[in-house]
Length: 236
Image (cartoon, rainbow, N blue to C red; front, top):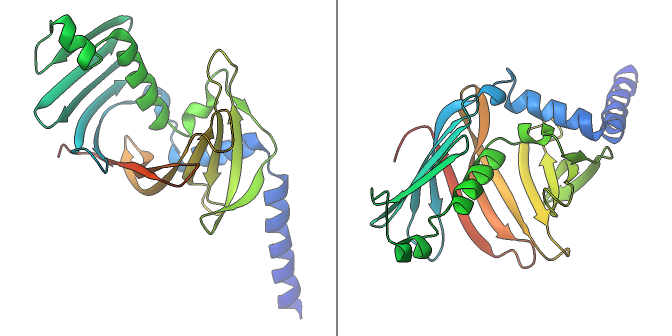
């Protein structure tokens, strides 16, 4: 009887904890899992990402991120086309198959411009910096944590929004209730049928940071598969 009472107490404590934990507390626990030594703010390393999509050939990307020096670069190869974008503090450059001064026609065709360079920088540093990037200034953390089932698995869910000048999307981050690993994230635009969800699997440790190895992207509306990003520490 004493053992049963103890088990019931532990079970009740777990349920109570999941209901009482705040959004900020959940985020801290998730960061403790993914970046236990607080290395993200001084991150300096290379990521190798293979993007697989149903209708196109694989895109192989080498991404360099040096946060202390405010440096970012991405070299992407698909078929015979190689593009490079560099953001070195406020200086931006790009090239096509090694040509640093391509024609205006080629610039337009391959979106070789400063906006695209900054988009890549923000995209890769945000996604591969999660969940640590949720500590950035301007991030609005909903302190109410929900326990939800997604694809048959139970998660602790953190809701995140941003001021309109930063972004209009509403984000939901799904964390394993036992380990606090980030296993899914999802964003919506104007309606519940807009946006996408991303299933995360596996881990790749880079600079002592546990990053999701595989990201599989789907539309929220109809679960249509969009593609997969596979992270590696070595060039393919």
